[in-house]
Amino acid sequence: MKQGGGLLFRDIFAQSMWSIRENRLRTLLSVLGILVGIIAVMVVGTVTNTVRQYIFNELESYGLKTIWIYRDWGERIPNSSQRRGSGITNSDFEKIKSNCCSALKRISPEVFYDDWQVLFRAGSRYNNAVLQGVGVHFFDISNEKLQNGRLFRAEDIARRRPVAVIGPEVQKQLFGIHQNPIGKTFRLDELKLTVIGLLKEKNRDFLASIGSAESFDINNRVFIPYTLHQQLTASKDIHRLLGEANDLETVQLAIKQITDALGRRHNYKYNYTWESMESWIQTANSYLNRITLFGILSAVISLIVGGIGIMNIMTTSVVERTREIGIRKALGARNRDIHNQFILEAVFVSSIGGLLGLLIGSGISYAIMLWTGLPAMPSWSVIVVALLVTMLVGVVSGYYPATRAANLKPVDALRH
Image (cartoon, rainbow, N blue to C red; front, side, top):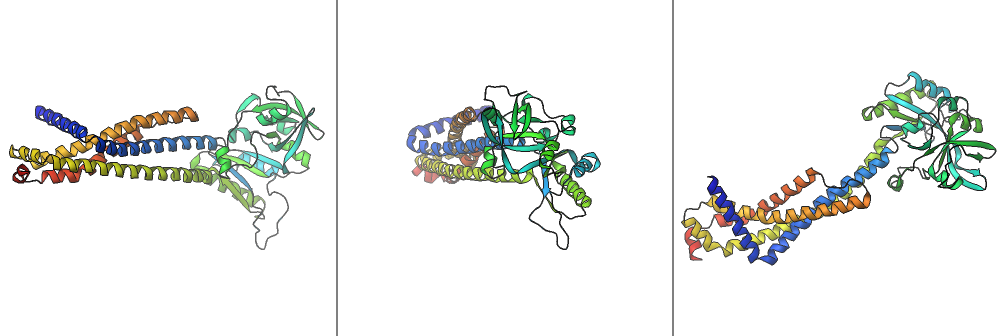
């Protein structure tokens, strides 16, 4: 049996090579269709994974479990008086931080000026930057990385110390990109601030392009203790709470617990709204789905063209080898043997295009990896799917010619 199987495979291989040599142009065109289709499958898979990695790198710069809660200024509760202010106070924050919400890991207040950007001065240098008052846990929640210096401590917040953590653009504009800003001072009006920390640069270009990120340059920010910010504005308001849930599954529960606590503490005189990473992830996935759909359609069209080419070659091969088929049947070959031979030949031709497509697709993926700096090589699942697709195309495109060959009557075939 083994010898017979080996001889059958060798015979099929020889017949396939003969068919390829005799029909070089048609074989090239059919192989080209399969090749382009497989390249499209691999490149789509690679690009999708690369873009997904790029997007989630940006999303992680916020923290995937991050939530934002603030007053809904556009909605008024009927038959209820509304008070001025943000609807969130220092006592609210302390209560929520202490024992309010089991689904909440940590939380930080955020306070801003009405005009987000303010003018800072260091000697003869000036810079308009965003000023934010934040708490100790702000940097951990928002996944900020420290390049130099330190972040805020509890005593900085409690004592309203005039210290600042700055972004790299602020360093560049006020001190120069090559100057270490730690320990240096700059001014906000008459207030002198000492730099204690320098953050690493962040990239949120994609999120900004889809409207999911702040409209300002996130690297051009100055952070001070929120208590100092409140002293400057003579207000106890907290404009926004920045929280982190215990895990992704408890994000909605944490939001509900915080908003319920705020509502109870203010007798439901304010409405609160929230944001989380979920909506941003959905927006990113919609972009990825469009890219994937376009690539799949291109791949399907190429594979259909390649499949038609293979079917054409195999149908022509059946006509050209009709007498050979008659001789084989006269010598005892069964319909199933003839059918399997032509199916395997179609799979072999299709596999040539598939293997070439894998090689070229891997080269393109490697080029994408070098260009983007992100891991872009195709996964094993993409490679396996591509190989299975080529074999399936070979089986489907070879089925009709194989069936036609198997159903030939020996007498009619020998007369050909």
